[in-house]
Image (cartoon, rainbow, N blue to C red; front, side):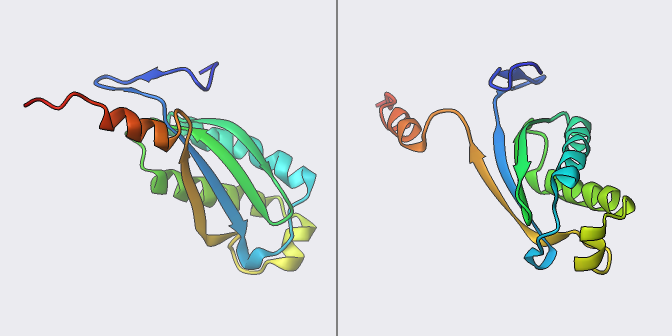
Length: 138
């Protein structure tokens, strides 16, 4: 997948689907450093590959991360999120970063909630207008 805006083909469908995800750390603790964010990128990318998805963009601040993922229609966003958060939490916790160890206890890195927003393609207003202008048969 070289061009993330390239229309993809499945066996019975043609698609171009993107989701914007935001994950927040447990208790909104400020635990991320540049080093940790750099370690998260390949983890998220690997999980996406397992789902035949692509991590298009990734960045974050000290208490949350943003991901832009191109994914196929057979993938449930909730399943993708569950894997992204679960695998990244386990892998980052194994590295025993001092900032995380001091501010987060137990096994969790992420808050149980997340944001997922569909994005890409034409704006909703344009699509809505296009559908309204279809020639309805009499």
